[in-house]
Length: 294
Image 1 (cartoon, rainbow, N blue to C red):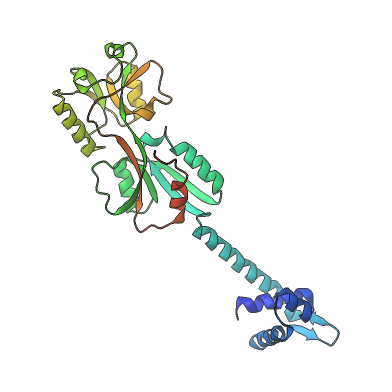
Image 2 (cartoon, rainbow, N blue to C red):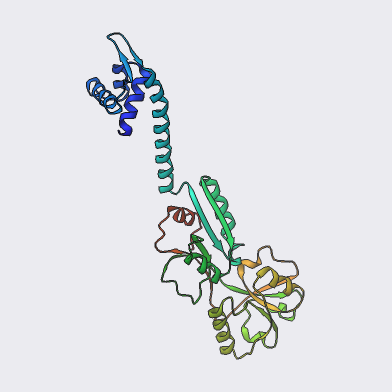
């Protein structure tokens, strides 16, 4: 028995006329009659009482009609679900991000994605870079937005989604506020600095150390803080200066000033990363909503 046979049966049962049912199915009447006869033979039960004037469902036919409609409805629903999955219009997408993208493309991208793909269940997770790699490898997240500076990304597909520069954050009325942008690293000699922990981004900290060395200064690092928001709060309190992505200037606390830098510090490059074998259209649909880098 095939779904086609059930659809033939339902058409005849609804029309109670083989000619009208055949027209509805865009086929000739004799083949339709033959298919219904084969169905009855397969089921070993009579589904219709036929006379020269009328066609009626038997008691067994009425029961089978209810079951056939349910089967066809479920089959249609399954096909619809699969088609939506194939187009990335339904399903489940778990993504992770670090704090660097909160003030950039992420909020608006998530908003648009949820509006355009309401059938997709979206899970958001704020994780550090090393945690994102672990979650990707263990397939607990599908997509990560991170700065993978120095990490091996050969097992992943990736797309650059954001590039920006570092700026120097300092409390208002600091002596360096008297200087216009750009400032140089040697101007920070003996200044107390707040940096991200080496354990969080070891390769990036090594690059910072190299830039300090080339500028001829030994950095006076007084605090190591992961959170940009906490870092800016400490800067505002006068505990030290810090290097933050330029997007951190958005919604920054008052009484903080920023200056651009003339330095060899690497740009802040955020990538979308996902396992290379993951070909889910959900990933592509979300990436399509991120503004293109000029």
